[in-house]
Image (cartoon, rainbow over all chains, first blue to last red; front, side, top):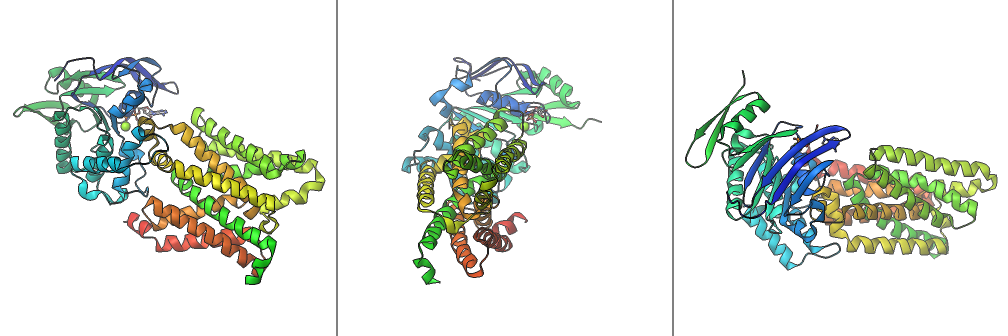
Length: 261
Length: 271
Ligand SMILES: Nc1ncnc2c1ncn2[C@@H]1O[C@H](COP(=O)(O)OP(=O)(O)O)[C@@H](O)[C@H]1O
Ligand SMILES: [Mg+2]
């Protein structure tokens, strides 16, 4: 893990309320350059909200959020440094656009309102599709993709403007195990290329074997640690009520979760 | 049928039908995809209040309705975005209360009842030169706005959160869309009337979306269906002596039914 410089994302005592209900409470988190962090927690834990706080889509009721050293709403042109892959349920899959058009949208922020994409933007979109191994899908309507293909396409959209920080919300929902493994391998590759990655998931088992650290969220952030550290196991037990054991296998720690009896 | 075209009123009606049929169905694709159909219905009914105010004040009723409906559209947008009120609730409130303004004014001004009725049900053959000029101006303005902000509106309608993260002025574009809806709807009430106008926005777009999975094609098909229905509805109404507004809307509904039956998109989505 690289600790040089200020954290890419820093949350300090962040609390979020939705209509009186506390969704996040006193959350502290620091994510450094090229970290690959998983935030896991059950449904309704506040994972999506946490990402939206980092993105500036949800304002915390108290606490401080810094992204690239600034509050998210003051980022300006640095917004282009953030790539976001939303939860798939937030997207209308019958929307009449092709994969290529969806990826091209990733350039619209930098292009600015009213400007047309040029050859440079179109080439960037093709490169991004190449990078995620989805070049052959360019002409397909987005409604005709498998769950795994869809995730690659939305990552391509997030990557098209060469971001430094990538935020993903439950990217493996509905993706089969083999495709998910390929998908996490792609994310590892992106980390090697210098990206900082924050991934939100309730899929503890698979995630832990690919990431540098795990944060366990259920309104509070329970632990933010390497996946092979013991307090992480404790936090998972507290959250899921299940026994978690680790098997070390080569460099990446693998994790086995047993059903709670 | 060709001798009809030699009458001035019929020429004006045809031109109005082409302009309105085209622009309503172009904006309609965004409206349907973004789920704003009910706001469209709300705006059209609010125009009754706007027209009545114009009649009462002695100014051009369409002009006063445009101002009134822009305000109502922004209010609906504001309340549903900022407040804790859902969009459809906001529409439900504005829908009825602005219509009530019109009803109230009608009640106070006996003599104007007939005039106002023509706005409720439309009277395309009574389109004046001034109406036509206004329709032309609005159509041109909205067409230019769509052309300029084509890609940005598409992004915002497809994925508003990603658009906001990318730094697009999402709120501004949303209000732009609402404003274009208000302009187009109010300008169109002369043709089909307040009661039926939102159909001109919704039905051609809904039919087009049954037939294609490409946004650009959807816009083209929608515009073709809109213009085709408006023009042929006008002739059918003239031949049968029925209401042009009703003929146009029923033709569009027929095209939608056929599109839905033939739809490759629907068949695929149903697996
Ligand atoms: N806009 C909102 N208004 C009210 N409550 C919300 C809103 N967004 C999320 N919530 C609530 O906040 C909690 C956390 O939601 P979310 O962040 O989506 O959780 P997760 O992504 O972990 O499933 C849930 O109980 C949800 O109902
Ligand atoms: Mg979520």
